[in-house]
Length: 447
Image 1: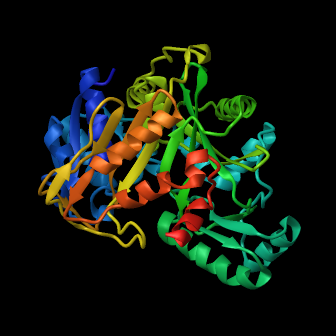
Image 2 (image 1 turned 90 degrees about the vertical axis):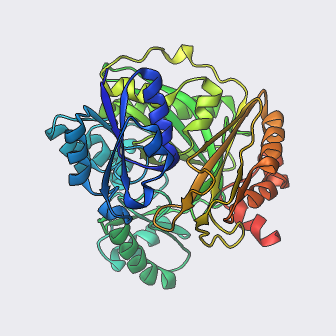
């Protein structure tokens, strides 16, 4: 096991990793920007190192500074969390060359699954269903028009190296395609340093369901059930739950086996999430694999009783999985609401100083956050400020707990999306579980 882990991240996920390390008896190093000097992850870690100014490209994306911090403090591993450098193959390679363990998959696996057209090809090779689309990246608007003619509208253009809902655009006609092609290429290049894009058939109003997998270096691969993430705004998830309210047992098992087959195909080692779209008839299609811990890993932890960060660390240290597929049981139901520092209805950012804070509690309530009174929410980083997670004996109890917890949750000094979550949970679509990726837009139009 590792002696000391540097956490190359900030906010609630950095605190989450520090807590797991403490329980494993591992020392921790926090890195921080000048803006985060007084953050909780800096206070909670055993050591801290300032790695640059507020802008992320000069701090949390500053690879030389992070590697130097690891070497100076004697860290033998780096946990990247999610976002920032979590799926940066070059960073994983640099860690390896410096004899520092990257807590995640290999650089080759990050590249294979991070490039979505390559991941599609791998899926097709082993018979995992994929959404009809271009099997190669599109070099020109003319290529895009030809592919769209073969696939049929509507289509969706996607950044080949994308993630987090960025670099995507739905197109419904030839007229839209030429302009959209250049816009998405530009967005992809700016966001991911790779302007290549590909095309998929756009499935209207699907459910977005993902499978959590876990694989070690000894050939053991299991899945931990699914999470439904269909409440989305501009492809960004707002609410997740486990298990899905509507997925049948047969489809759940088939999706789980597809996710395992994909991980086995490449010899994957670490945690990972295989994401699918499901149509109204429960036909499912692979869309991508995320090679990191996910924001929504918490709901899987609640229904399985496992600490996924600890398991991720154990795998990186070379240990075998401590359980097989038959040992995994799903208990009850869990829901997560992502609380963002935004206006709840127009989603404009809302930075500011926290003037008051009441965090809900009670049985089955969990809040992951780095907020405290007088802490500052800046505009330098993503707007997620807290994750409210509940666990109940069934979905009805989980929803009752979430409604109660949201009514208690107060964050003063900024606007948050808490009122929006209350409205979503009161909607007929959410109550009966029939919601899909287009539901939030319909809800907002009625609000």
